Length: 496
Image (tube, rainbow, N blue to C red):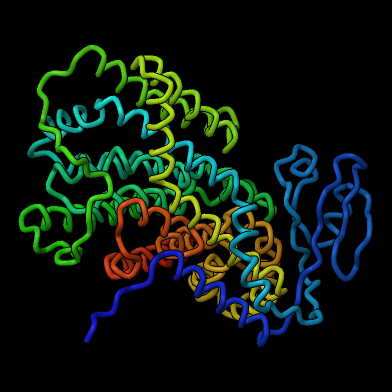
């Protein structure tokens, strides 16, 4: 009997798109009215059943049950439409058929073109850098220097990535790190799943304990009507304790694999290292001045990216331009011919083409749910599920609700703006501090990012050739203690 082989990421995503489309035939269609700000006419626009135009003032927001500051709209901090509490109405069904299923990935690619282009340009940048041979030499030196202390590389990496996640929502940017880190981790005696667990897991912990992440914490707090500084103690606890749990879990596994490769969850699967060269480089004890210069420029590019995103308000357009410019500078420093530069750049981009397309196809899931008018239904049912419970039960259950909602709405800011006004108003009825509702959202959303196919886990796994089902098997035992930790922190935050 032929052994079952788990489907590729593309097949997994398309299966979910089909299931989502089928759901639109059976679930009732419905939506909430939404409010958006027209900066040109300086008015609020209500869309939905009660479509209208209202004065852009604080009284309008208060009358709609939106505990939000007018200045957040005027400054552009809130740009997406915001759900209005108590406005859910069932709509005429909009079932998604064969045509919609066929077009969903295409529309998703159109809507994700900024991320897709970013990934392709990063691939070209990595290709130009690898063409110099500096990467192989640098990896060889680092592996030699870290010999016997490899676990500290894992610990440092998790802490740095988590720091990026907690400050500016670092996640998409981590795609760029795998080509550099995978050879280092393999040289240290670990397997291909360790770099994903350290890099991607670190970003998820950063999202769960997001202290000042503008795309999660600040937008969610604004939408709920509280200052982002409120409830920060719970997020600090989640960030520190969550990182400790993650480090313990990964280091324990990594050391077992290093001591005996047969302990690897990938053992016997025949998975190839995607960054393996035809000719393996040997460890180098001394690097030339040119190699050091190239390594410095390479590292400086990432430092500039992090600074630009965290302090200058950069996003994909600026980051993409940065990596394109850096690739050109690397080519000039190497004195590469024009044809060799283009060849290295195109080959590098080609290596990440599959990853880029996965990102676009994943967006198709959200498109089907929104066009099928069942996103609002899911949100309304979720709010009904947690209403009427005691505060001590409300917060852990709400975290689970956000965990489920994040499967369907993988954007942190998108989920915050459609759910926070509704859940915040519900929390006031139950008697739960609004800041703990924000924390329940962060904990649930960050936890789902470990596994949701509509997020960035599939592109990350595609970078290292690790099957999705193997990842689920590896990460399942980690999610339970993290969920319990989140529930305990929420209950403590409410009691204290």
